[in-house]
Length: 617
Image (cartoon, rainbow, N blue to C red; front, top):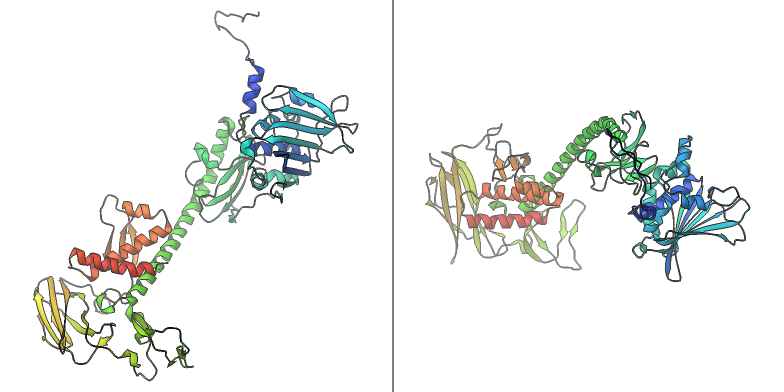
């Protein structure tokens, strides 16, 4: 027994050694946690052996799934006897030939740890490697998962196979669903640049699903970014190929090492979390060939000086991408805002056209209508459909029933059809049902009688007006139209209208809000009902309970972007659109029916929301 040397000043010293070789091999073999990564390593071994064609076969034989990788590369290096040196491969774990080749100046070779074959433990139960010697005879080496031995035997073949064949069978139970399509997609990203630089042709033949696929290097979407700054470090250059795409959470930048993907998403590294790396606007790769990887999984980065220098070197790239993110975000916000406003305005325009115009006196929507609109019929299927003559007039119309909110152009001769004549009085309305009037100003009100079909009744009507609450005066108390004179002080005045037709009596009310003043437009007319549908703007006021308010002077709806409801709604465009539409509905109801009780306002809000959300797209 050799005792460690003792030193009075330095204490004990010595060299590290493996205490249990087999335990160390087991730990190394099980360190690869991704079977697809293991398959990629097998393919890389073929590329390093100068293979020009690699075929991956997934099949099933006697109920057992297997995976076979066949290449036309150089094969296993031969020993002094001209036979494949399987013994060296099996007994020099962690002492790869590739490492010595790299030290000798060989380029474009991946792998340096000599543990690649052991990753078959994560794929299947037995590994069989077949290669030919210099004498043309085929030899095979077999290794079993969980066992320390290996066997090398000759393999009878009529013609010695070129390159190397690798067979893993049976596959582990959890890898039975490892389809050829999954393998093809993974290799297209994992070995993207290695495939492009080596020119190797990789084919995946899935005999289980009867599908055959070619592994093409992944193509990125979006616009290639050309003005990327050159990144050079003392350890080597960094290659970048980045694309600016539409924002998508699945978009990501991958980290590569010498053409092989290390991390699908560079943002998993603490140093690359947050924007711009995780903004979702970019696709592409960053390839740093000088990074050092964790030997087992080969999907981890060692935080050494090379990595620290890499992080410092990409700072200019981070600044450039941040500028692109800001510009793209602003453009997207403007586009979304325009689309939302267009959708909201269209929904309200359609809703107000469908609702009784005399009850909504906020936006000048009806002023934008085309043509003279009168009630339209909804005709059933008939042999006499509505026909338009060459000048756009109605030639003939089939019979039907008029529906509320339906309109057609009046006939060219101005005559009513028989179905347009109104029936007896059924209800009455005041137009407008609610209005704003400045103090000491006047407002003209109109009485409207309607039949059961909402058609206007014009004959045999008597009108009686009176003020039932509040101040103000009417120029008369009868007639179809009256003029309301506002008082000198602000307040709320309620009017009552009674319409009589023979024995039929109908009552309705109107509310007038008297305010201190109304904003005037450049032409001197009140801006109410003169601007059309408003726009909206965002104002972030966190902690405030108000969600929105209407700025009459600028004709905009101000939305509190700091409210928790807006923050929640902004997470999804459809939800945000509906939220803004409901705020518009709230402001319209509050402005148009000011002074009404809470339950009446809610009824109006439900009514307006129904019609607007029906047209919201």
